[in-house]
Image (tube, rainbow, N blue to C red; front, side, top):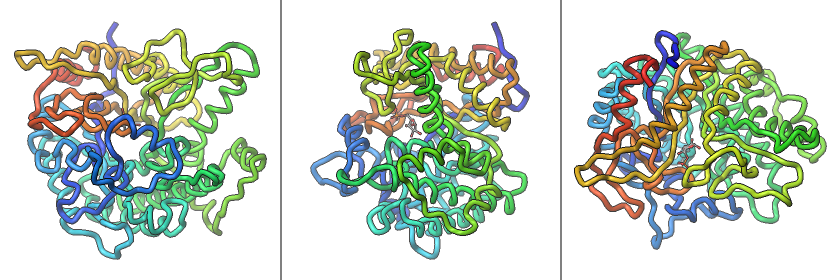
Length: 476
Ligand code: BG6
């Protein structure tokens, strides 16, 4: 069956500055959170464990420092995106290139000039940039000196950063998003909220206070964007994973609903409806969480609602109230139990294309705002054959099945703006720091230990995706 995607559908690929730029000291860039996260499976436990000190250990390897060297190779990479026919390219701006410590008064010209070069190069090829303002790359100085997003002062620093980039790129960037996967702060405050909760500390008070500061910061950015760039669109960005109940026992169904409310909807509700939902107020009350909300904050949330929802979709989640007699999922940051109907990737991420159609329908029927899938893809080991080819049929199969479900959702009436698959060029994994967890259409010769030539080559999926875009999704 072939699907009809809307005219002007935004096909493309997605990345994040910290995972592919490298050049971690070039152009006066400061240190950000990803720069102090070592590579390897150890990273997952750091992200989940309390007490991380945000220091660099000279004995360890830090893969984000060199990334895949997009900093110096952006022209070559953008030419490859253009060859695939990308309409859009999603990346983020590294806050630390613009404000190396985060609390300076004036932006760093070298950093601003770098993104001018990148955006100009994209536009030259007819590719619109889609920009995430903050993607797991807060300045480490703000983490150490201010305590990350739990400190209200960070809102002021963020506002200064946003003003600087809006001012500079207002004529070049039409699509913006504020915080990448903002709800991930619930699972990994280190990356999303810029702090590590001490062992003895109650986790939830500081986490929700930090969220409040991000909501205020996001609303300010939205308002400013609307004032300065009336033609532009600005969205929030969440991870969405539909939560299935293990069975039809109403206790489990209710549990799944509660998990979904907090995980999938809490942040989106505030961004799209501009207010704290009832279920979270109840949660705060029952858990004795009192937020410090300043005068004018709640009005601001109402005034700064987003134009669209950007979201990542990798998997669904299955939940049961009492998990003692069922198998959990492993290798994954996401909680939940094993779904017997689904296969998983080599990293334990359960593959569920129909879950994407469910997600699109859930989000659209709840909010009635345009949706943008800004991440989706399969992290897999790739094998380079003797003749240099990479036959990643498993990736094509994964993407095809997900795009088919997008087609179904569009038939269901969902307003979908576009699709940028994650890691369109191989890059450093966020959760494990590995290079071998590859998502790309473009292979990068770099290994987990940093060896390799950094040479780029086209995988089989490169040609497949080119045809998908060329046919506006008809040829899958
Ligand atoms: C999302 C993040 O969670 O998933 C990306 O926004 C990340 O930064 C992507 O890279 C895939 O996760 P991972 O851990 O496989 O890199």
